[in-house]
Length: 454
Ligand SMILES: Nc1ncnc2c1ncn2[C@@H]1O[C@H](COP(=O)(O)OP(=O)(O)OP(=O)(O)OP(=O)(O)O)[C@@H](O)[C@H]1O
Ligand SMILES: [Mn+2]
Ligand SMILES: [Mn+2]
Image (cartoon, protein in one colour):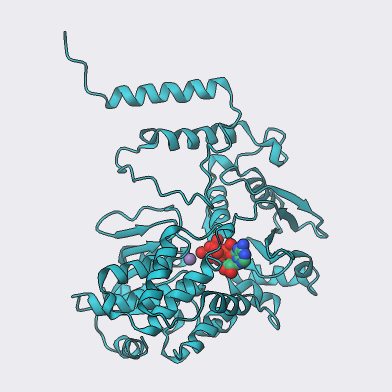
């Protein structure tokens, strides 16, 4: 791996075509390792003339905020100097000169600042539900496994296992174990495929570190936020979404809500952060652990605009897919709303699509009849919309959009994703059901073969 990385630096200096493997903008361990190891595999197996280069999607100065990544690189003697960061390569300029092709790993939707790179995307490898199509010839691998690194491990072990060296195997092994919370089913991350490839990596390299050792070390490094400023904590694990001219940041905060809210000058810090980055709102998702080592989650919505704040809070409170089970927590400032999140399995992967739908004005974000948000007071449109989702799960042709091929249903990760029907059909109006059934009849009659003339 190390020799490969030295070669990447040289390749970027030449004017060769570059195939960049790019992780997501939060650049967590999964994104970094998936980019490094997939680029390494492609470089060693592809016939293309392009040089395959992993790029970490953050400025070099921000690596220090990712204690788990810093720890693993140093443990494996991979010098940080051998890595290439987003502020060290001009992807847009390379794209303009036609030199760039892109593989996205651990995400499949480019942030608004990168939408111009869309045409350069030739492959996607991700482990969250597809929210955007990448039509052929783009190669798409999307599976709800615990870690994107599992999909890379599968690609290498099925494609050319002999290229795996100990460093590369250890990068993959540690990342999958961290993402899957040491393969603990109760954490709701691990899938059979994650377990399969961790075992295969261990079979190829029996001297890999023990799972508990590597998990404890990475978890500790990830959660060590000592000495970070509020701004650094917000930037440490951040994603952004934009829609309809609104920009929203979602930060994972690795500390208890109470302690976070007691940080000095917090409101001013949040305001400065949002203004400096051009965010209209910030959603902070805190996570910490109770004495039984179970995750405790809170949600904070910081938004100076009362309309936008209400819309965001309503979308989160009314979400049914999945329900977040939010209970308002005391808040000491009108710009800030806080909640205890009862659904401890709903991580950002689940919350971000709810917010994206809300920003794009998805019917699910409609006002409740009373105009005030409340988990029990979801609007009629909201519930009809849920029926649509539920029926479309049952009768896929209902969601068929003629020009869009019906994709095979994304495998449900039974531990994390609940089928919308698990809790039975939402309570609905008779006319909504009638309406939906007549749509099904119409859809079926328009696609069934014409009756033979008698
Ligand atoms: N049950 C758990 N026990 C111990 N540690 C846990 C448990 N659940 C999560 N973690 C640790 O907290 C980090 C953050 O986990 P998360 O909030 O569930 O989210 P994620 O990082 O796994 O995935 P996201 O939903 O945030 O998707 P991305 O946007 O990051 O792609 C975990 O890393 C784990 O250490
Ligand atoms: Mn991931
Ligand atoms: Mn995360």
